[in-house]
Image (cartoon, rainbow, N blue to C red; front, side, top):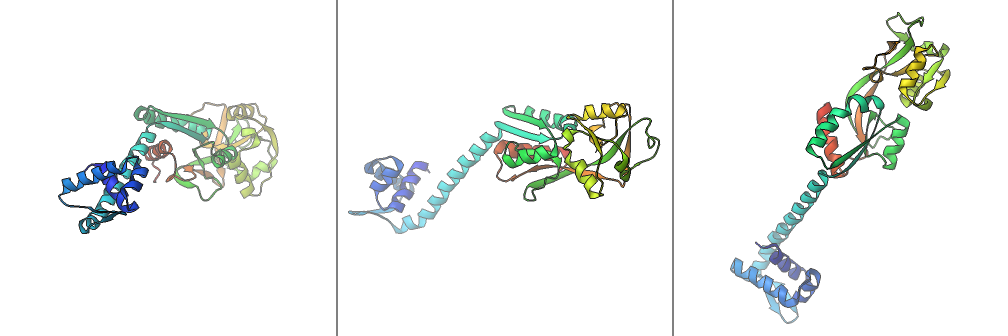
Length: 291
């Protein structure tokens, strides 16, 4: 069945006249009449009764009307799906994340994704949890790979855990121990990366009632670790930061054991832009996050 004939029939039936239908569809009244007549010829029966004041459905027209409406709705679904699919293969995706995830988790995912979707532009901003919160809330970031954000309404798809560790100079009194007691932080000079704005570390210390003596703050984890090497203090950070670095420091698990949960998060996956939604689904499968 020709879509435009079907539109002419449904619109004429809804409006009660060929003139009104023509105004809506951009045809003359005669043009609408011809389209309906052609559809009637194709079906083999009349759909509309022509009257001096307009048109009304015939008995056969009443029977066919809901099928015609459904046919047109399927056309709308078809174009909607095509539009979504088109958007899926082009667009921009801004990701906010920790430097450790940007360095070790995302490169392979982005490589595989852009091989399949070369028109999608992926951008990454490596930053702190506090800034990630602001970026996602403001819409500057479409999604984040990080520990869970404070907004409980965000979609959250966990994919792993990252232990928190103490980073010590090699001559530190605890350097040869099996673990580092977190309460010892009260007497330490603490070096805080992320400009002293590492929310995961602050939340951990707050949990155990520890007020840290922050001696130095740095922008980069690399700088903080170099300062630890020189004996300027100790660091508390997630293990993922150090996993692939060769440093002259000692890394110890904390006592009590502590960790951060890592996941993919965004305000609303269902209503995300097609390219963003496709990336989240793709990445979730790669890291084993259940959607």
